[in-house]
Length: 134
Image 1 (cartoon, helix red, strand yellow):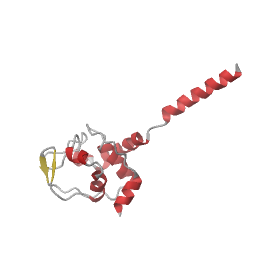
Image 2 (cartoon, rainbow, N blue to C red):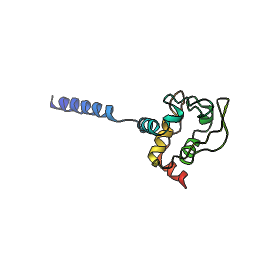
Image 3 (spheres, helix red, strand yellow):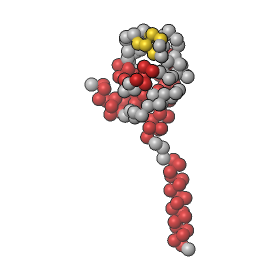
Image 4 (cartoon, helix red, strand yellow):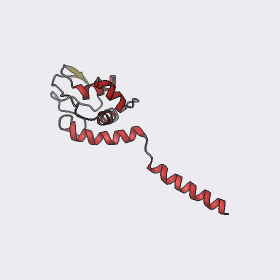
């Protein structure tokens, strides 16, 4: 009887702890939402749709999803060239965001490549951002 009580308690504690453990990618995406709201949203908008003719959409972005790894470079170093996103041309400069930490850049890259209809298999890490800074 005592063994059953101990086993039941162990299972209950394990189940409770499992509820608090979060997938690393999901945790990064959650943190990335905060980074996005504080650093990107004013141009790309809350819904990721940007402003036509000025700021390209990140939502359902063919440009972004063609090569999601570009997200780190663009966030880190900015972009100053004409691009085509979802059939529309954008030539507005995006300033570099190199003041963000490696973790913040990885988190926001995970957020934008997994929000508003985007689904990336890639998981960006602070180590990848650190390597891209060089």
